[in-house]
Length: 312
Image (cartoon, rainbow, N blue to C red; front, top):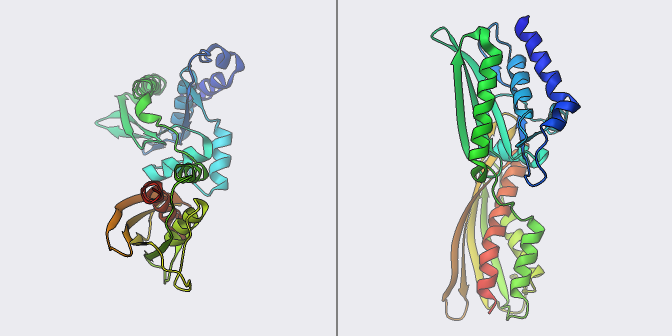
């Protein structure tokens, strides 16, 4: 009961406007957005909600951090059929960061070791997949002191490794395509044909996700894309193979990987103009959606190098 009262008091203090005002970051420093997932516990008298509340309260008092509100986090993840506790893989971390704006996720567990209470925190960057861990241990009767020490270590790690947690923001898909189009303006754009053999594990074919994505980008950039029904013969033959795996499930997310190998040859001389390979991974709540998004992402990344190489 004493522990629970301390937990509630700490949480109320963290949510107090006075405390938040006093701990607000200076205007010149942008705080890092952090989402705290529910801690787990296998220690009977140490409840997961108590540890989670104390960690949330402790981190919210650090002016270098901006915490995602628990209600907002819970609502967002519930709408996306994602859990709020348990181990978090890198694919899930990226998805949660996209949904909530969090740059760093904190989760952890409480366990008993040689008569002592051990608290372990996992700290994951949603943009970079960099992960760190912090640990404290001591008597279970000192839960407030232990969580306070753990919060200090978490805060110090986030501050010290900020550049490893917060990566450069990836350009949107449309912005990436716009950049490709811009680099080919005013240049000779040869006629092309695109033929990609695509496989998605566990799904009967044929599939044309990668081929359609690549063809669409070619067309937006002003290339004439010819198929077998055309009376004209293309100047450049673009061929390749694209494979997406069946996806590994983690909680309510599927993480799928795609490998896309491509080659562009001049039809008349058979000269290889371009050859490259990309491997991507995407997480989504649907297995098929994750596979197709991974294939599209691989096609986009290859197009970013392929089209400028062909436009001379």
